[in-house]
Image 1 (cartoon, rainbow over the protein chains, first blue to last red):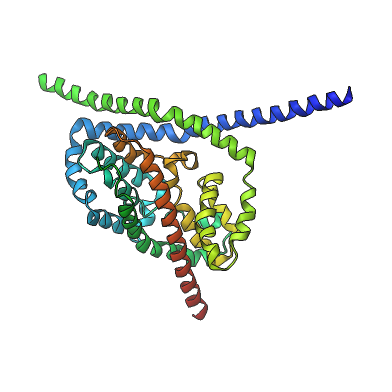
Image 2 (image 1 turned 45 degrees about the horizontal axis):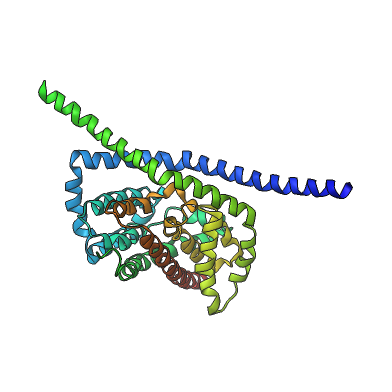
Length: 180
Length: 178
């Protein structure tokens, strides 16, 4: 009897553990969605609505599509975003990258920018990723203050090289993507 | 009066258009995202993120064969399991001279991972979703773009890790002499 009891308790515990984990996972997922994802969707929807309904889009399209539908233009965008003084300013929350990404997405959807430029564009709009967050990120990794002092400029300067390089790699990696 | 009416029509038209976009986002990617987030969250809890920490200790070793581990495998697993921003805590297993490079590699991966594993950084989903929605609007599959974004991202963080580690080394040496 004791053995059966023990078995039942073990089964009950492990099932409860798994169900509890799944339930908690669902709760976390919904919370993230409500707190982080949906507000941004609302914001992005407003911007897209504004672009589509007012025709501002055509002007933006003329300005952006020129630079976003050639390798040279995308490289220029990535160099500007990677300038050490600008990159920490463009970084926070990836808001700039998300807005520019959305604008480009609208233009790609309309056919102003060729679809195969999507991949290099993803890297061109984002060489500044995390540049606003270097001291905090290093502190999370328990870095010494001396390391932070060297690390901040090291990452910023590195981006000047690796930002445009990423665009070139992405450009060559996008061959054969969405050609037809 | 007519002008006013047209103006009012245009005004509400902006928000009708925006509302239609919001509805398509909520009906399109949101349900998938919630289910995916739940599944991956559960998986992470069941596996236990502390398993990655032993890899962090290994990745700190010198030698050329540990570069890909340190700046590709470790950032990938860190971002996948710990997500943004807790992924950067994995850097604590590395020596000081490698910490900036690891941060650079890890932070550069929080967007390329979004196409396939959006749980890692859902608050910044639109870096990916903004551009990919244009591809979706054209009627193409997103899979090829998502996988290439991820793979190119891995190559890029590897290069970033090496370049930043090198710059850090040069700057630390210069500081030591001064």
